[in-house]
Length: 336
Image (cartoon, rainbow, N blue to C red; front, side, top):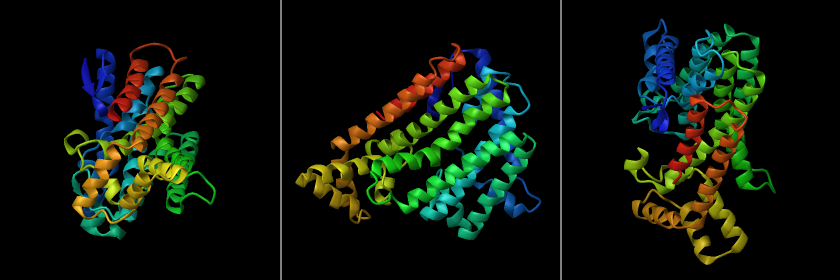
């Protein structure tokens, strides 16, 4: 049994392990090649986040999905490079919008070189992803374009906020379906499609990826409140301090509005106030960690992960299916 990929995924078959490791190594080489430019400064900026590391969650899903067809088919690795380049490009843009100073433990591109360079570097990565896509055929181009449209729509909806009368929790889950679920779904779809898997399997894995992607983000929301820095690898309460409305906070607000309990209203006021003060921030974290809103967010995370797992039921049994099921279990474990 060997651990690979994010969450410490255990691969229980040597042949599958070899395929996954070989595939991910080829993806890494492809990413380095795709981010090279004749202009050294562009290469440095484009490889900045790539060299900072990352889970390579989406390429891993491409490799596992490809096991349901021919995992050595020529389009598998390039499609994994495409989804990871797209993901990296969105991180450059996200950091500009969020005015982030750090990404993956390193200075963000915008804090190092300014917003203009960061935005243009993201655009450069999108262009390189499109160049690779062109060799994968018009169907791959269409699928990626649709996913990118959903991703951008999700980002715009998040910025605009829910329309009047819309449940903020439902709105947020729709946002995550676009921002995160769409590209994770494409990762599974590309892996299966490029390997020549049956169309029914392609559809199932696409739906699986959508739900797993949302569960993955919801687990991060829970971790931001519930974990310590040793467990999560990042400072707890980062999103909370920055005023990002994650699912536990949205549930808190809904409960305060629905029931009007003084302690809930007071906690909402604390969370919506200035949390740059360490003492106020620590108090908000302490109270959220014991509030029912956090447990409700955990249940939502488990629900999406279990929906993803249930979708795999008709898939042929084997080590690849077991690995995909284990990813669902790992997401639930992360959320506590």
